[in-house]
Length: 560
Image (cartoon, rainbow, N blue to C red; front, side, top):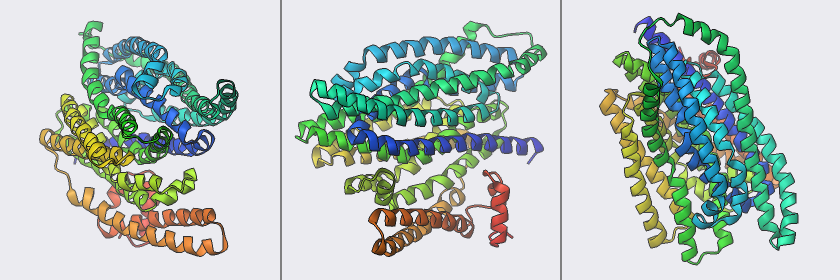
């Protein structure tokens, strides 16, 4: 391999690792703050929070979610040619686009909150939380432009730091505001005759206030970085001597042509959650299920199950985001070998994390629900057992989505997502109608959707890139290591739980069993990956703290 390829490989994985680590930290912070938030607002409050967030998320997807990826792709392509002035025009054009779409989206959500939450999703009190979220749409649109700009320049650090800061501010404000507004909601409910409903609704609004504040903090931070970088960027602009500059018409055209396919794919890819909620709640009410039970089940699904599942998925999202500019540069340089290597590397990196997370969550499903959310209901643990496999499918489909966009096959994920969405909806109707599986129908249909997307996207990636996935290292070795890890985790948890529960409370026994089982699982998986030849020194060095991990492996004689 040439020196340039080695440098590109290292830089590619390093940038992906930076964003992946930031995403994991953000998701962990997000998971941690949801524990006290759930304790304050309860399962019903989680339903209100989740409903508002789903509507916000789908409008965000339509208005500006695709902006960072599109900007990074366009900036990266121009910087690879040394066209700095054109890259600057992309930034200005994208900001105008973000102001327009983000501002329009904020107004639509604010004034249409009652229609979205009440008429469509049968959760009218969620409108309070949704109105608090509305201005965030404009903030996130502008923030996305700057994140995409820096990613296009080849650095993930501003995005990574702003992401962590955003989540920390979000966590603090969410918990404090939820407590304050929950108390205020009780007073409002006392006057209006619905104490628990309004308390949960205002508490959920406190949670969404954290989202708004966190996004504003991230925007302020990244603007500070941008203005600090401006002197360096001006020098780069001066050194740009190419003569044929793109006009703003060309820039807008390229921006729209890049954003629309990405927008369609991400919207179709993510719209399933809001469709699920509409089908589930309306169907369950028609079947005669209690409205409060429906709300609680959806609260567990959106506020506990999805929060846990999304932690490992952060890695796939980060790798997808970092893959696009790197692959775009390699693709436009016609470096086919580098494109193939990066695709294989990204798949391997994601699967090394996805498999153990999947197995670990399925084995410790109920203990984790009890540990984090004090929820001993069998139904809550069963959700995680049934849906745990979707971690692998969503990880692969998310990554392959980004890969296809990176190699300029942006319409393919749209078609695949549409096919998977239609199949998903048909299956959900069938499971709800024929078997009355309640919330489990949603979880099974989601896993099926992710599996179908994964198969369709990966097939397209292999067909158009010419890449060949190393099945042994990418899939088989992590599967074998995770299976062994799962057995050990199960035995350690139940042994320690039985021993500690004799002299202590069940909660203490569960805590000790969970923590020790997770630590044992990490150690066993690390060792097993060497035994099953799923990892070597070269690969290990590319992970965070690679040198220390190699030293540990050498001391344990796993490497020679």
